[in-house]
Length: 97
Image 1 (cartoon, one colour):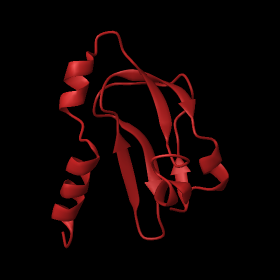
Image 2: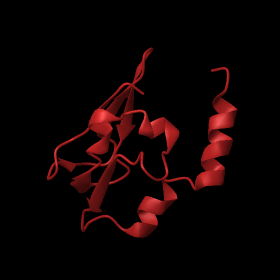
Image 3: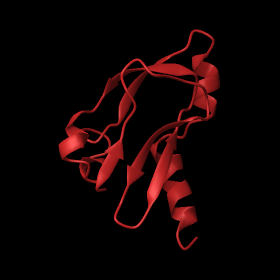
């Protein structure tokens, strides 16, 4: 990771919108919002150390913190997200694509 384009604190998003972009040497990837919500915090460490996203994604490499909109239920949100095992299986299934 060479650059993270994070949104501003206070920005509002609807489900499926591009929340931020992550740039590597070869490509730019988009991160989509899992639900309607407001950005309440960004990881400002990524400005100087974007490689934390790859090195430590579950601790120091987090991107943003969202406050879910009142209209979003946890049940609906959790149905669209994967746990760690399911995500690893998904990534493994994408190898070579």
